[in-house]
Amino acid sequence: MVDVQALAATLDGAVRDVRAVPKLTDAAPFDVPTAYAVQRELIEHRIRRGERFSGVKMGFTSRAKMVQMGVDDVIWGLLTDGMQAGETADLSNLIHPRIEPEIVYLIGREVRSVAEVESAVAGVAVGFEILDSRYEDFKFTLPDVIADNASAALYGFGAWHEPRDLSNVGLLMEIDGRPVQTGSSAAILGDPARSLRAAARLALGAGMTLEPGWVVLAGAATAAVPLPKDAHVRVTGAGLGGAEVTTR
Image (cartoon, rainbow, N blue to C red; front, side, top):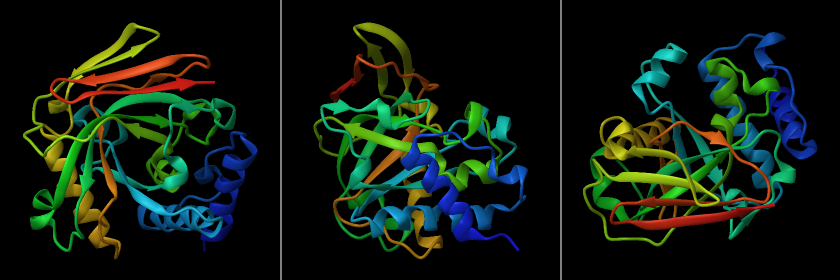
């Protein structure tokens, strides 16, 4: 039997001590349902310390990443208010941070079915996610990354806009004024709305509902890039303005 609480404690310790650990499956292989149980317990550590749920993030939303990981469905992680970055992000609390541009949805009312999730969207924005695998060398298996809350670390977003078609939004990410990634929201499952529906499906399947005020990070439109200290990052989306963060 795999000790879910012990595995979650190992990952929580890695986060708090800012130290990479070996893949959990090296010592005790486990399956995807067990991985999600570890993820939920990991987030409960944060909740017990006073953080609150603030949304969900989607992963493996590109066909190339699915093929690479040998899966045919997306994965998801849970967000808390303690993960939301302000104008600055302290990288001293992260092990090997990377950043990627995101399409972000704001949930306006409780979502009780997949069919109603799109009508429950109150706003859309461009944003970013800062990833930080807690594993050595940023290497993991599918169960490992799910247990590690899909490598979630920090996130941010720009001004909210009225809901609209986001199936082909051009995105640009710059670090210190230098373009480092360009792409289209179409890279997110062909349309980020599909990722939004998947978020509702996975949440409901786990006995949760997307709540008013929560956000959904629809997934990366480009590959993540290493994030240096003392840098200024700006992500812009056509018709959506921008989101910025300075690292220290």
